[in-house]
Amino acid sequence: MRAEKVVYAMLTGSEVLTALVGSKIYPGLIPQNTPMPAVSYELISSVDIAPINAQAGGVILRSRVQVSVLARTYAEVKVIQEAIREALLFKSGLIAGVQVIAITRELVGPDERDDEAGLYMQGVDYMLIHDET
Image (cartoon, rainbow, N blue to C red):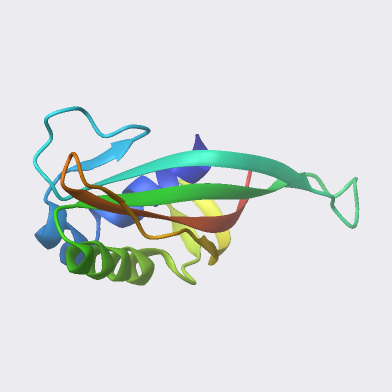
């Protein structure tokens, strides 16, 4: 829950992003009948990073969080993904009570569309290196 807490804090704290999607930033799935555009985020994986000194205490985690955008146009998806990138990429420090060492972009997913729903979408994975405590 720590990585997701960081991502949520950074996304909702971005004036640029909230100007584009308002408060429509959801954990997991975007609720049905939500007006577009909207953003979702979910933890994909989290693994311990082996410490150099096991007696030093504390656990460092590497967590992958996918942030997805759904919008009515391809261009809108790209503008929102750029706002997300600016909100997350290379951030560090104490964020939402979690000590974050680094946030990097790991994987940019494919451009997708659902012709029936009239939606475009794309997910991007971010890696967070952070304290477990």
